[in-house]
Image (cartoon, rainbow, N blue to C red):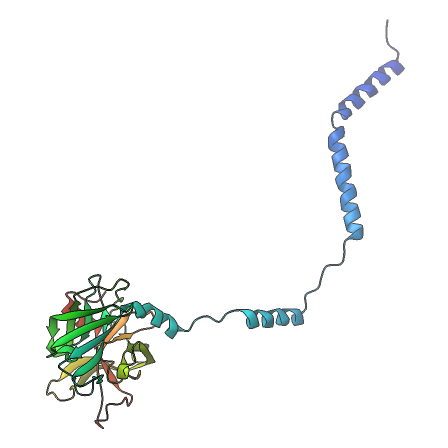
Length: 281
């Protein structure tokens, strides 16, 4: 029996709806999404407008509450502190470079340069001393002996009998890139004031200097204007990175008053490090 045209149309329409029924969940989801978007668009608040005054106010509040970064000098000091040494001697006080705690006692400075706790200092601090004591930053006190001398450069290396429990060798920096005007920092024990720091600039290179009371002429020195006084000798001269670039050896003292007048000298670390068995890093 042949189906009528009307019957065929009904069959085709039913087939189409059956196929569409498979996509009903997708269609319902799409419709729901459209409804949500329409409702949000109709009810959302106007966006906030940020003005220049708002930005300035926020920056002012940030600057008022944000901690200040540490000064370069403070970071340099913290870097060198575990390496500093007070050199106390008996039996010799170098003219213009020591300070009497009692008759025959002198105070100088030094810096630890390796893992053995070897100490680089100025030779005139310890030359001829009957006793040498190293006082470290952690409070450890130890007798020390001279293991190397470099008289032409006023440099000595000391070795303590006892190493400190807490210490850190200083980082030695080459002087090949040192320029007049570079910032420098001197740390030592001027006038017996342990761990004192002063700041200045390099004011001359390749200078000559004759230590007080000697005919010796030292050459190739770094001239600087960071304050140094009796007791600073043997201490480190550092750059902005906290690297030791020299060992303080003396100060110009035409008035014989043993006070700082603006000119100090340091042996370049490239030269001083030779006494310790190797060049500066």
